[in-house]
Amino acid sequence: MSIILSLSEYQGTVWAAGPYGLFVVGEHELIPTPQPQERLTAACALGDRILTGGAPFGVAYLLDSADQWQAAWQEGADAAVLTFATALDYVDSGLILAGSEGDGVLRSRDRGFRWEPSNFGLRNLTILTLAWAPPMRADAWPRWQVVFAGTEEGIYRSPNAGLGWKRSESADAAYQTVAVAPDVHTSGLALAGTEANGLWRSTDGGRSFSIVETAPEQINALVALTDAGNESCHWLLSDDTQLWHSRDSAVWTAVADSAAALCLLEVDGRIYAGGENGVTVLSSAGLHVERQVVNSELFN
Image (cartoon, rainbow, N blue to C red; front, side, top):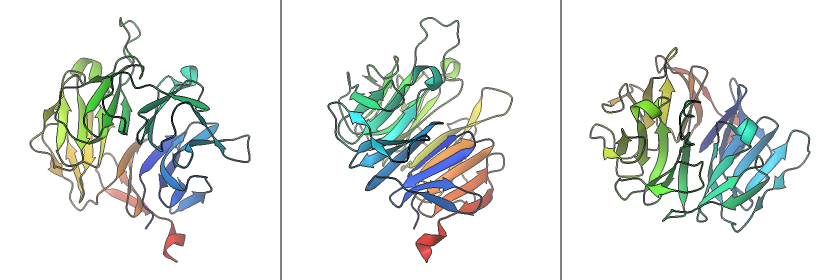
């Protein structure tokens, strides 16, 4: 099976990564791309380069101008990288965060060449998910750069782009996915999904979370879907059997005839759902399946 754990997009090209390799998501099939990790867990596409996370290299990168992959420098860290999160001002700042399997949050200010731990305030150093909040208004003061980290024991919030962390008020649990509303700085809405303790919802910008009673207990993937023409959103999550949809993030209903996903990504009005059988592409408007994309070579 072409299991997909991570999805990333840059300028219309969608990349998928998982234990069977790195792929470009084509119209009808997953197109394999050579990469150096023996255990591939994440990919991050960034214009003139692509990064992979996993083991044995932690982070590896390939530049458009190069023929070979290179291992990034990780100062004081050698754990596998599980997830990436690119700052929304990446073009100017070069800032990327990575969540590692035991060395906490790694931070790069040079577009992924060099990484160093940034763990002040963290109590647990296995980072399962990272998610940036949208930028604050240009006239806001102070103009915080908010990012969230989900660990094996709690959800953490950083107001300063990952330099320092404070644990949010929430249950002790393994938080494996986070999604942030596009209007979070006014609505305060953010969601965090756990491995076995349900969905948690914040209305104060991620400082505290409370349980959502209508959601499933296991949350494998979560995404805020944009509504055209305004800053509001609706929401989609996956448990271990199917997709669930919500307009207000508080009341959830199962999506009929849907399959489970391990990662979700919205691109130009479509939802890419990576799972145990490749990538399913859905319309974000009607949540109906448009096509299934698999690597047929795996089944020969």
